[in-house]
Image (cartoon, rainbow, N blue to C red; front, side, top):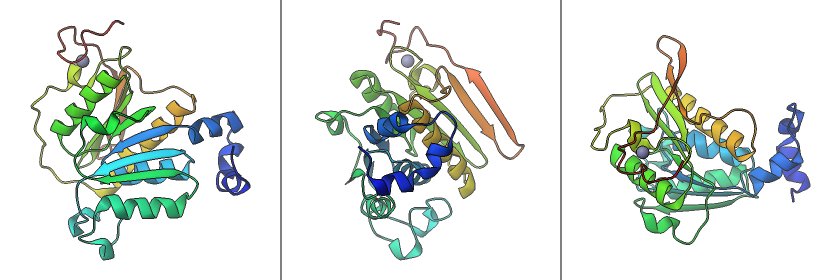
Length: 243
Ligand SMILES: [Zn+2]
């Protein structure tokens, strides 16, 4: 049930053709786990809270560093040295005090998913080791995984659904190393905004999702391309699943 203030906060949603109270209530009843509250996590968390997602849990191990601030829009210079998990939760509750927002300062591990149900895991981490851990949790717990990666002027986004689409390991080999390249902050904003929008669409059953295909964005040359991705029949992580 949405309060009068929530309906005012979300007024512009209801001006979208095809949007109705059932879609908004679906968002309110959704539970999302966001892995990381950095360059991708900042816009993802911001837009999910602003869109009226009812239950958001997120995890980040780091404190705010000045070099984060070109892209991590939940933080300011005065937050330097403070845990991102705590600062981000305060900011998000200022935006949407009607949501249940839980934050954890620490590493991602499987035990975080033992006693709670999530409709979606959003991959906003900055390293491939943790991405593959999220992929294994997604397969084991049967939770869709919304993956994104971003660097310089480029990003990729796809929605991975256990038993329906390939998993991350089908197309991104384990052991892949970070490029160590830089990033323009607005690019993290684009990638995170696409992730947030895909999450909102998926949870409200609206439009077409990035299921079975991966979106590549090249903003240096202004191109958006999607490519179909296929299950690797020899994948060690997901090939046992019936499809
Ligand atoms: Zn796989």
